[in-house]
Image (tube, rainbow, N blue to C red; front, top):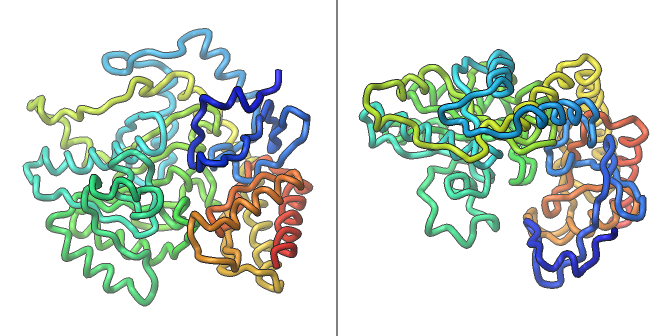
Amino acid sequence: MSITSKDQQYIWHPFTRQKDMAAPLAIVKGKGTLLFDEKGNSYIDAISSWWVNLHGHGHPYIAEKIYHQALELEQVIFAGFTHRPAVELAERLLPILPGSFARIFYSDNGSTSTEVALKMSIQYWWNRGEKHRNKIIAFKNSYHGDTFGAMSVSDRSVFTLAFHEYLFDVVFLDTPTEANISSLKNIMLAHAPDTAAFIYEPLVQGAGGMNMYDPYLLNELLSTAQLTNIICIADEVMTGFGRTGKLFASEYMPNKPDIICLSKGLTGGTMALGVTACSHRIYQAYVDDDALKTFFHGHSFTANPLACTAALASLDLLEKEDCQSQIAWLGTSNLQMADTLKKSSLPVKDIRCLGTILAFEINEGKKEYLNQIGSIVTSKAMEQGVYIRPLGNTVYLMPPYCMTPDELAKTYQCIIHILHEIG
């Protein structure tokens, strides 16, 4: 049965202007990189359905694992109980994470994983009797989620405009360049005595506009933070699990984080799950006879067995040689496409790529989320059977790893065709 406009009258869609809202397209099936609507039309999912889908839609291996787990245990409270999928996932994750991590704390999405990291960092100093160390340092143009702590450490933007007076103060730094790295280190040193943590999206700022910056310079900042015992939090919600060409973006830097936040691709895009992993140093501040030093945080669906099972299945697929080859091929293809765009006379600028992520700006209006050229690009691409969702005038690709050469070629050709029309 088709979904009508009347059926939609009770639903409030995210990040969507409500007045004169266009009717959402009903998707009835996903297979591989393709999404299918009610009329049987297919669309290449070139952004992995908000960056979550790694191995394609409807993957039979992940689906089968979830099915068998659902017959055994679908959910149980995780305070006072445990279960095999959560234990196995922690055992699988800890050895592959970029750094020395000791414990896994489960939540249910990317925003909550960063909330956990912030609370964990602030209470770390509280437990140590250094309550004055409660400042957070973050980057301008950052985006760490939509809950209040996550909004506080995100750039003040259209996403947070209505809530500015409720957000806690943060020291915001520019992302590092050769010209500003010395001043950034000095600012960090000046605030270090009162700073609990430095949170950052390593190498790629996602919702802020797919901004990319240099790993060597980020490593310099991390070095400064670690010299002063500032806790370093890597928000790898988007960059994790191969998106940047390496398993984690933090692998590009010698200095590693004390806490890492994961979600999105964690389950291959099939279930909601968040992970916050911390080092032994952080965890030990909570091992105390004083009950008040307990980390009083949790979620109803913490370590959901179905979600943990999906994550284990996704890791199985991710570790296969053919998946790693696909990631490398996507990275090489993006470099070639970037070179094509740079040599063209198309209306684009700041062409950049890292691993499976390709991004650029359209030369029209301001670089901002509300730039209407983004919705025009989406509409034109959908007409050609490709789904992309620009961030304002920032167009980007972040496809599932199962993308075929023909599908990727069609996606590139679609973008070039649209740019010719706009130009």
